[in-house]
Image 1: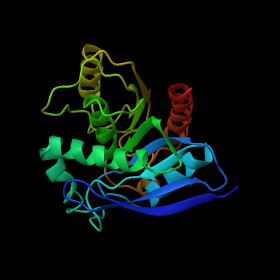
Image 2: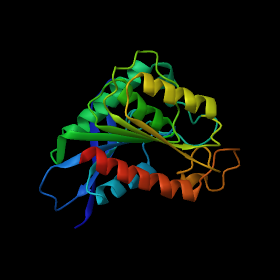
Image 3: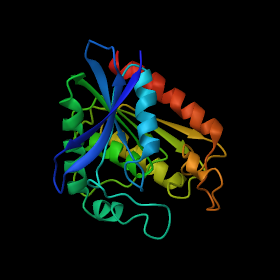
Image 4: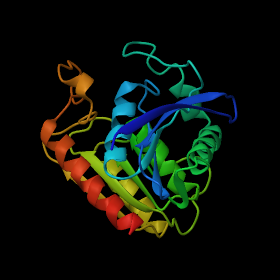
Length: 240
C-alpha cells in the first residue's frame, strides 16, 4: 500500500488556492480528513510531509493553502507578506479556512462527518480560529501557535476538542498569553488540553530551524516527537 500525493486546486475568497492532498492508494472505505495548516511561509514541502505522515496513520490529509495559488514566502524581512493581511482581517482568514475545509470535505475518499485540523505557528492560530468560529471539525491541534483571539465572538460552546502543544519558552506566546488562552477556552465551554514542553520555544517542530540564531525560535527534537505522539493519541480519541 502506497501513499499518493495529489495537487488540489480549489476556490475561495481571493482564490484560487493550491494545496496537496495525501492518502493511501488502496483504501476503499471513507477515511477521516485532517487539514494541515502551514506557518508564516505558506504551503510548502514540510506541510506535504506532515500530510503524508497523517495518511500513514490512516487519514486523508490536505496540506492547505490560505494565502493563494503561488503566494509563498521565505524566512527573512518579508516572511509575513501574505500572513499579515490575514492577521489584520480574521474574518477573511476564517472564510479561507472554511473554503479549505470544504475542499477536504468534498474529496471523494473523505468521510465528511469526521474532520479535524492541525496547524503550526500561524497555522496553529488558524486551527484555533476554526474551532472558535464553529467550523465543522471534531478536533483541532495547535503546534507552537499564536493565541490572541479574533475580533469576532467565539461560538458558545466551542464543540471541537482542542489540543494545544506549547513550548514553555516561546517568546511569541509567553506564560500570560497561554493562561489567557486557557481562560478563554474555559469560558467558551471547550474541551481543551495544553501540553507544555520544557526547554522548548517557538517552532519546535520546524526542521528548518535546527540552526536558528533567533532566540526562542528553534527546533527541539524531544518536543517535536512528544507533541506528534500527543496529536496521534488525540486524533484517535476524536475520531473514535
